[in-house]
Length: 128
Image (cartoon, rainbow, N blue to C red; front, side):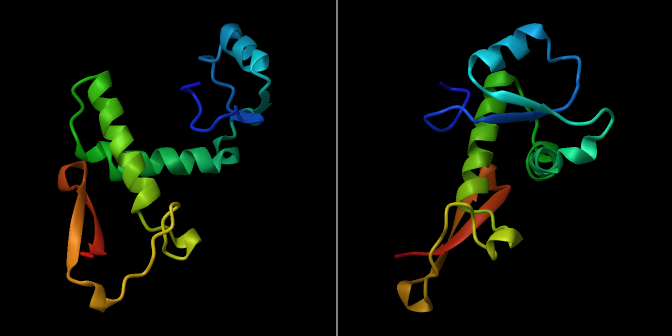
């Protein structure tokens, strides 16, 4: 249940042909009712969404911190994903975040900053 953020497993798993995915992995995916979709041999451009997300995580987060272990990494990534979904603006969403933010007029108060990842990123809102 912890593998997926929602109540049910996804219908498809898009993956490359890396040898790290052994028979045990493939059996487990099949048992969960997930259909594997393999990209063409030596064609990483066929998985642009995954490549884009991993690149964003690396460029905006992991290139700027020192990780002290698995538990520390999980905490950093959890905070980054909170920032990514709640505060990071995205052009494809008309400069909004995946969890939409409302526009606050100046009459609602001063602008305050909420720091993410120890101040690496910020979200600016009005103090209501």
